[in-house]
Image 1 (tube, helix red, strand yellow):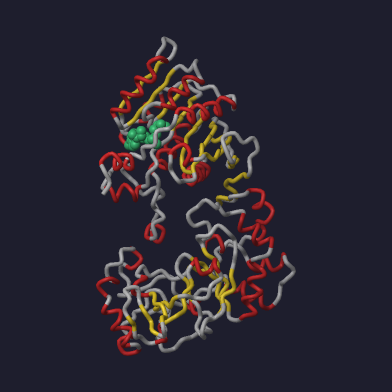
Image 2: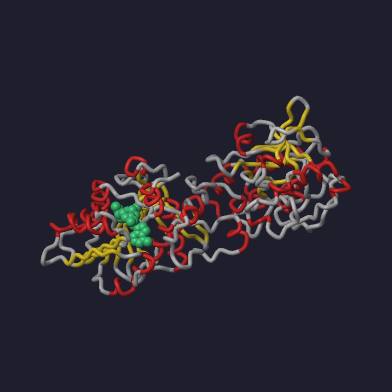
Length: 512
Ligand SMILES: C[S@@+](CC[C@H](N)C(=O)[O-])C[C@H]1O[C@@H](n2cnc3c(N)ncnc32)[C@H](O)[C@@H]1O
């Protein structure tokens, strides 16, 4: 159970910035030559950033600080007392970011405007588990719909919402945003601003050691964005630390896409396809204790330690991310009761009665699965299953690991191998197809092309969406390997499958 103090810290994303770090950030802003006429910190806490900015920019005319926490406001006022002079108008007020009339606040600020600070580090999902409503009124950030919202992509940091607002305030103005935040948040905010056409003149991300400064194990950075009325930039330089002089990479928006490495993108963009779908994610079922079985001394054992007796037709060898990375053969067997998403499986009552009974025995658990993907689907449904799941050979990769390492996966004990939903794969009909695809996808052009889009600090750097960006035909031509096999593989990238149902007794391995 979390104590009140800890709960408060989590709910308000409350990590006060050490004064030395705030000073370093202000020194960086000064180094760019920027001199603010006004400074605004929308969630100022105990005032480290305001103090450091006043030390650095002593001739600022107007300084405004806000925070939801009254005690912090009192502390900040005390800290800033020595800076209150007749030349500098300083106002520190208690205010809830989500209820403040910001347009009125911004209107009164003389340009150039510096918006500085460190917004709360907490996600809406975490707030909802705490029963907190420290959120914007309309909290579905991108208006995400359908499958994205269902699979949780709509989870966001409240700092992301705040930073988007900060940049909107600076649109068309002479200003600078200097904010500490998670690196993923900084990227999403920039992507949003670039797409929206906010007048950005330049942007940079400086990685910081969040463990050292805040005791938090996250990838964090200083996001520095210069705005000006004529700003049209859509790229950002990445620096490995606040003191680094050389940027290691440049990411940005190119052809409407967020590109992790602009140089590699420009080099290989001719390999990009459109609307391709050959790469698939593995099977999602959210009930490993029921669906996943281990073979121990010739007996199938489920996650409850029970011996399971079911028809072999429903069982497929399962590989997880950890198996793929360790190049291990399957350690488990997965019960796959459907052949396509949404297939009605009541036919199992007659076709595979032992399996049906087993699932019925655990129905109380399966019916309780929370993910919205199971809503309005037949009972005991799984997700991410289709004819491609039963292809005999596959080239696969883990979405969780920080390496572009593909694996050739042969059938195991005469059965096609399936994957869990942390893995991605491409279905192959034969060993030869598998080898040819492996050679294509592990080639230097393919690895560099994919690297152009990968942000390795993301939770899941590799996704089906990423893998489906590469046009296998264009890649084969690039490598001088335009032949019958590569053409067949490329055709599979545009293939649509009819969602017909297949009886469990007819294991069709050649549906492709
Ligand atoms: C990460 S701390 C940073 C504080 C300060 N900016 C600094 O750098 O030291 C986030 C701050 O946001 C404040 N906060 C959280 N939710 C808020 C809200 N809805 N409105 C205003 N301030 C809020 C917290 O009280 C906390 O002081």
